[in-house]
Length: 288
Ligand SMILES: Nc1nc2c(ncn2[C@@H]2O[C@H](COP(=O)(O)OP(=O)(O)OP(=O)(O)O)[C@@H](O)[C@H]2O)c(=O)[nH]1
Ligand SMILES: [Mg+2]
Image 1 (cartoon, rainbow, N blue to C red):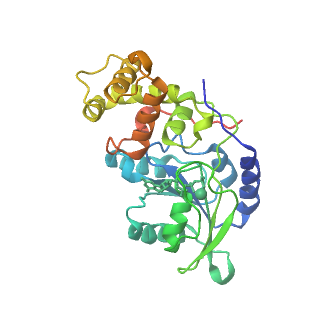
Image 2: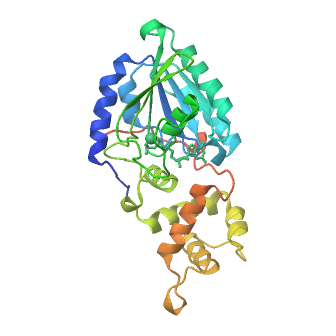
Image 3: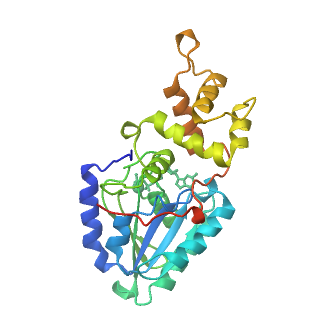
């Protein structure tokens, strides 16, 4: 079963993005570098049409660098619509972001349409992916509120960069029906949906299945497990036991253990881990 979260403010945010789109020279779509496919919003693809697009792979410090490089090639080669440049960024390297993002926008905006040939760009993407952090980095000061939870930005905000670009920050949007159940679980694991919209245990078991299949040693190392768990249920139980997530009678508190694993993942304690590879064979995102 797929997790859905589409609160009312997203309908309004989507409408504002649709209304402002014709005036943009470039769209900056911020993706989560750990899951560039799951975090690519089909509504954004639909609304941007053939507008040039910079696909920004945010939080690249949390993703596997080799996989991120493969994603950049993949996104530039296979994204539909207009021309696409893909760039990985991290808030840990502000100088790199300040150089490469405006440069890419100017390269794509062949006919800047703002006053005095200002390049107009709109920053869009799923919730909690780093859109406002990107705006602050480009402005070199805190102009937009950021926070480690989805739906921090509630309205559109326009800023002017010294380099002569007009940028708008937007609330993160998802889409009404996420068809791909695994993609919705990746989004939940990464933090695109709020805690009250997800079932911690389901999300943690999904994440543990991924780690057991691709990075069992990272789990074993982090939680000092004596052997590789036979499946995700055993892994969650063992992790809970090792970390003292116990209820009366020595029973593992699975909710607490799930909470701990999910936040360990979001905090990057396992080192850089990608949840998707370009050759995993994803189906095209579907809107409803
Ligand atoms: N590790 C890491 N964390 C980041 C990076 N960029 C942003 N974050 C964190 O991600 C969280 C969300 O950042 P925001 O900039 O508020 O995200 P947003 O896309 O504007 O979110 P909404 O406005 O809620 O849609 C914050 O805790 C940031 O510190 C990054 O490059 N690396
Ligand atoms: Mg924001």
